[in-house]
Length: 352
Image (cartoon, rainbow, N blue to C red; front, side, top):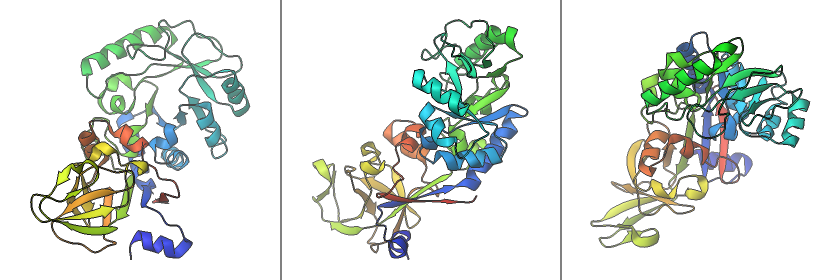
């Protein structure tokens, strides 16, 4: 029995697809990162709902494997996590306003200072711009009493070793007088490739989810993908030569061709520019053909398959990294765009 029919029978939910988060994989990735970091603290980045994986679930798994802080983008994201993690350090990486300061005071959050304004009675981190050219101070002021950390952000640690080392040197020089404070610079790529950037703590996101920060095979760095996405064949059609499938007739059959229609599309996070990528139909790699629609994709087959045949969109070798290469983007964007919430999808957590 397929996952979809089982869930319809059990609880009445009619879903288009199903997501599985493997917490054992998250824990493995946290251990891998901690092994690479040595004595450096691992701070788990769980912004954007844990890069689409589920922030609270990932946070719990990472903390169980020794992560010592959680990093998010907004005070609102931190506030959502605080009830589940009442004693954990929560660091807000993004910009803030007066309401956020009040939230930080009430919930014991830590804020990042990027423009020289340092709030009272809130633990803060001063962020120095060493080459990212976004949020950050152009010069590092003498840290006041509420400053607990100094930080910067890599611009190209996944692709440009020379500039990454330049940023590291700039940061080390600027923060040398204040080495008694926690200094944190490395992201996932930095943690895995640049020992000199590991310092006191490393803010690791993408690798925690088993997605390569370098766009390659995550296994190259000992990482395991944590997310699985499945659907099933809803209809099978035989196209005669000259027949097409989908908007714009972007795929026209040149020979008799079986296609499977799968009820996911760009409304579910399977992007329109993923035409041409491969998914697994009952374990066999098959190509997406034609235009990805809002609610359906067409998969080229060698022969007819039964309705209800399982389709793996992510997992078992159908990787987020491969999809990203086809779309001309990065794994971060693919993962963050997936819609894993009802009523379009069901979600379960395993391996805890």
